[in-house]
Length: 227
View (spheres, one colour):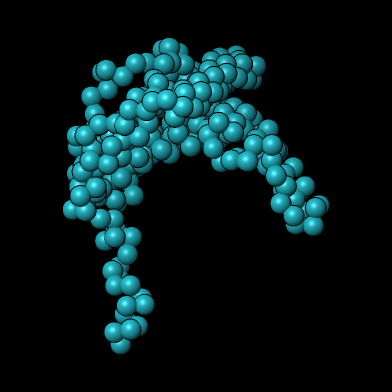
């Protein structure tokens, strides 16, 4: 298995045609197409469909040969997590359309780009207000941290629809193509990241990101000791 786009024909579809078109349109507003490819060209909707199809594509094997088979309580936990995310997307599409019809008398997918941006901003507002209230509470309690009801607030199951959409759009744009997105490695190309030919290259040590992230490969402590 290489880091080229996998065959997605065997992946079960979760969204119906309207839901898929709506989510793809919303993703296109998160990473729009301009002078560089955006979410549409990267196939972020395919990344999401593959993720929501079940638990068969959660963890790619380090050697690039496929995906880990989850079982037992681990599999049960992931099924529950995926089901929560599925429900959030279904309700998110419904909310997008309801707000789009109320404001513009049309479904979200049929709006202009500016109108779609406005609907997304309105839908995101409650999440922003919640974050603001938490920050105010922290300041009121002399800087002591306020523990939310769910501890892992950055986990996707704790995110509102728009932040969840933004998270998965970014993941689908930049993740290794084995997960179904980053079609033709366009996400990597946009940031000038060459990427490995396969996960096996990374696993075996034949490929390293060190050259990409560091101009000076010598550890500063070793350099100081040698001087």
